[in-house]
Image (cartoon, rainbow, N blue to C red; front, side, top):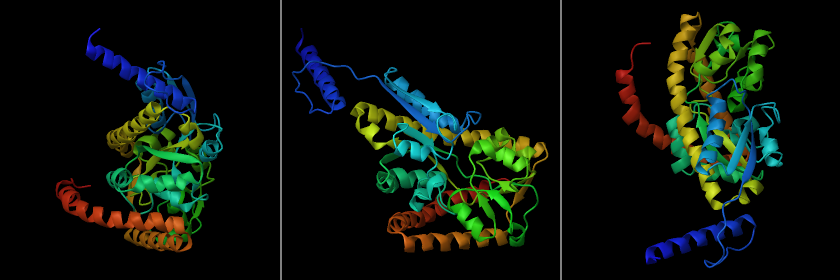
Length: 369
């Protein structure tokens, strides 16, 4: 046997022995130990999404598919739609208590547990999708969010982004702040807190319940994601006025939440594969939405949807309300303040840069609305 082949076989044996030791919670075996294959692992992933929304549920599916493909089928994760294991807004609890090993959801659904979780998704008048990814991956954001999630026995990985969202569907026109008084609207996160301060009766509903609530008049308005998913839910059949921009979610990230105990039992190879799969799902979902939304918006308008811009009065009041509320939360909560201060410094710098390189270009080449 050639010397190079002998060395290669020794390296493979050492790697396999290390994996076997890790999965059994023991110290790595020496390089002379017997070789071992990676284990078969089966996980369940609860999600907040109905399967009918192929793009957002598809982000969860993509993570699972990529993990299986990169492990030769040895690490299998099965995604479940909202309601199949737990309700759409109960994913966080299921992951935390270990009922499932992982989940695909939005951090801002759970701000009642810790308001800083909103930054994991998006905050009003916050970062665009590209800026959000820059903050999470390169600006220290993901490390901060994992500090928050550690308090709940979890890790978090970005696993999708919707891009800038729309401002929601209304049964009647909203022209001024007075039109918001007493309005019943589905809107989660800090954006919902801001709207509540403007007189809106805010409700939080999972995606699968939005259409019926709007169609039956239980709510007067609702936001979901954007043209492609809103069309899938049929929201255009329950309300005809479609507002923009979705100032509360300028670049919303979807979370892959993982139970810490389950994560620690994975071989390092599987951990890295899972991490890589979430990277791919994060980038691919944004690309899908940008492509699908351009076509869906045209269909909606051709079908009678009336596209409306929020008035400057509403936008200015919402922006002031958002700033005041974020500062209030920071003054009341040390964890929120830590994330908010770091996030704010990043936002100021990246916004200045993007105003020079992107906004100036887009302002010049954008076609008339």
